[in-house]
Image (cartoon, rainbow, N blue to C red; front, side, top):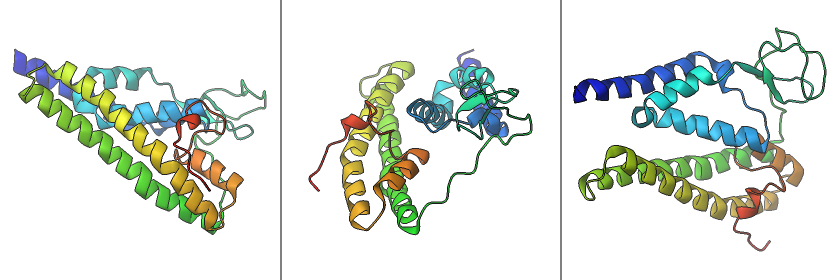
Length: 211
């Protein structure tokens, strides 16, 4: 019986990921602090589908198809014909994803470097902490898998956040020294999830450095 429950748990997580990946309009998020936060949590759900199981499946079923308003770039339901934010008409055939603006070569180079150094390493740090913490919880502390995974996930998020808070100001300083435009770098950083919106409470957690 325990084996059946385990396979049902893991299987529901995999089914949830399949639903999300086969319906890209469920993974449309606006370029705001709220959109960045939602996108991050959905990607965490996808990455931890085996551990979260039915939570991923329920989330996949509840997330409604969306698209971006081509006028204000806010997220609206896919079936909407009037944007509820700017009241502009939106056709049903409007693309779910609006092509982002083209940035200068220096900003693109900075974003590529930041994504590789900060996002990828931060993700690996978080996932490594979650995996190691869960294993330690199960083998050393002998806690149940739910408690081990939950505590490890919280620690992993904290580790990732500390890495981001430390790395981002130094990445921004180096990019500006290389000639990247500050406003364009901020816009590109928000669009690629490297940066929080200017003035956001989350942006204030950066470990500032001297120019």
